[in-house]
Image 1 (cartoon, rainbow, N blue to C red):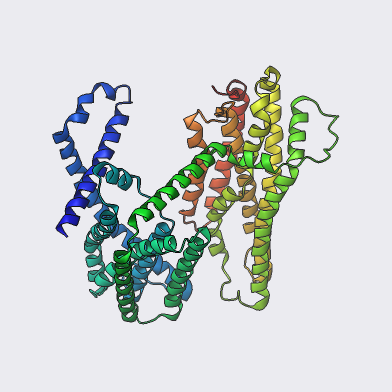
Image 2: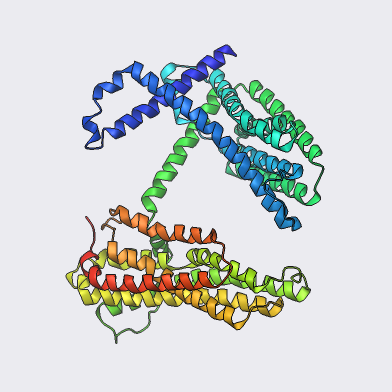
Length: 544
């Protein structure tokens, strides 16, 4: 045990020192800072040992505090589950023993399941690989020791949080049950990873194991939620089963005698993963991947006659016509989802299953902020921006006539209108679902609600049709090689996601929200359009 502890501490110091060297290296790349940090600092081992010690202490303290947050989060999720399933109104500060047990179970199943899935798809750890190579340490000895010490470290950091959890739940069985369930994850996953290697199992075996872990975890949790077993029975079962799995896996790993070959197998997996990742990075760049995928799927058919058009109008009409099938398919997928939701609503209403779920208008108003997030994911604005750049603008921006003011503005207007047409169909589908709910489920939604809903959907259609085009034309971040040079574009392009997410956090009780959001969306579009007219002719250029 002492030898294992000493070796793991050596490995920990090695990994932390590498991180500190990396931080110093990148700090010296900053123009002002590099004059302050001397290159001789890399060879000052005593000073770096102090940094290493401080980093380790901060890491331990931060990780221990995070354990409190994680257990609290899973307790909160368990309470939400029980409120949703049984229509209870449990108080967060009641610390109901059953809900606390469910929270611990959910935490254990999730962490254990993630460890299992991660290990069965195991890749060699780069730090472990370098450490073994540089210090010429036996893999047969190091890998089981590293697993044991890593799990022990995590368990020790979980003990304070589990003690507090046990104190709040007024049952100290939470502590051993939590430790047993947590330990079973990495041990069982490591053992199964070795078994997959021994039987020469490929990707199918790994995916089947992953599916089995997910199904078992979900089934166990939902069974406990719906059947409401005695919480002491759940805790005892978790302790016994978790402990048994940990012991069996530990003994299985000890008997495994092919660590050298297994480590080479993990290395091969890591190299294959790196190659796949690199190829994906090269082929599918973040802000052009959708446009490139659409380009691959394009099948040329007989185009419509656009001889009455010329210049930019002709190019845009031809472009949207060629990609009409692909865009329509994306739209139909979204409409199919809304159609399924509509059928479920109608079925629930006709079968009488929705009588208990009938919501008052005040409750439906509270759901309106969710539509912002729905529209964000359903909008075709981002896909259309990538389509027009990859398949048109990347080439045409090299020609002077395409960069003229009238050409730029006419192209922007045409694309905005076509994007708005696609997004308006999505808005109509959302509006239709509310109508179907009101008709089949005896809803109490009046004309004022539907007028306000229509205003909100019109405003969001305008916003989501305009924002991506606005950022694209104003900042035009792309080079001829489809690289993104403008960092502001990354922020602006992603800003709408955070706005959509923040809307989920809003709690509304009246129509004020709708009026404010609708007004803000329309004002943004109007001001943005004025800015586009003033600035786009100067900014709509290929970068680099």
